Image (cartoon, rainbow, N blue to C red; front, top):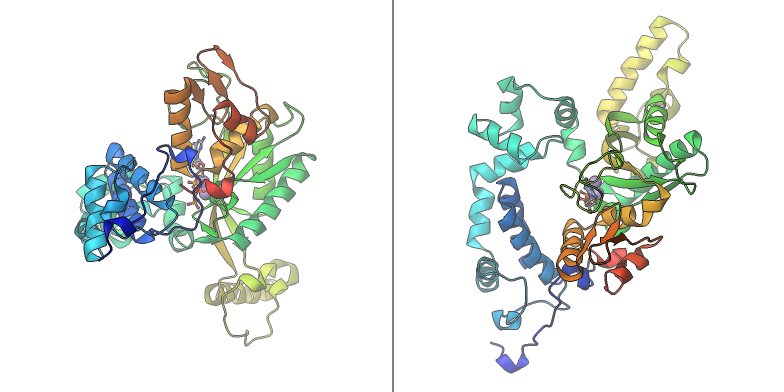
Length: 404
Ligand code: 8DG
Ligand code: MN
Ligand code: MN
């Protein structure tokens, strides 16, 4: 046993946005347990509990070393009774009994499988479970009416549950850049989300698009989407228009943390590059990649076309020459760009904490559009993330240290 004196005590700020949280997590045994309980709470519509577990996990992620004894946690913020009980269990027994029983519960397993379908949230999954649907097979057999998103989600289930790599994110970035430059030269594309924070994989790829000349970005999204569609890059897309200007509640007090940018939830069809293909043996036949990708261009007769199309399908089935990837596109006017970048870089908890800090500690309202000072009754303009942190009286935290 280690004596009290040898155990270093940590001192940590209570808001995640005051802390530097890299991807180098020394307490993943504890944070995995708490994150699972957070996820379970969120999937069960218990948002309060979810946030409490997320805050506790985030605090542990920010600690400089591994926690080995409960006494090290004395006086630390963000650790409620329930979280402490879970931590104690893991420290003493290697696992948390609550986590283990949650993981094994029929309900949790079903929630994971069903919400793993793009377009299916906790509410829908819960309804299906109450109707006796616990897996994809039962869902298919049930004859439930699925919306367009859910149909696409089911169709590309395996691909969309396979983590996206940085290489794939970069490949998609090139495509988006090309699309944007084709429809409005001079536009700029920024990678946001987890990849901007330095994550090596993600559940999707997030991009923010703007143009240096205010107003030029209006109507950009439909054009970008049309270009992508015409080139065959989209398996699914749903675009929602900008509702920022016409909203009644005003930008300072958004109704929720959903913003009002013109945005597009999409599923890209990403052709695998040679180096991205899994280590499969060389092809046995003489079919060239060009033939596989553009069978119609090589065919002079219907019979040839049929032959090539058959080859194409066989090739696609055995080698899978493309994969589906979730991509989020957002268009922001340049005047709001700094706020949009900050708001879309995450992590989700870091964002939540920034807004809580602004409101509770500074009497300001922060959104992905603007920062409003309620004391001075005015908007605070910014052209960089650094300026926004400065307004908020926070030390600047770079994206790689926002992994709360
Ligand atoms: P991941 O994809 O690798 O799993 O992680 P991530 O990139 O951090 O998560 P994300 O779900 O893609 O979200 C990226 C950021 O975008 C995150 O900070 C939350 C933010 N975000 C949404 N939806 C919305 C929204 O409607 N409005 C605003 N302002 N931000 C949003 O995901
Ligand atoms: Mn993301
Ligand atoms: Mn996203």
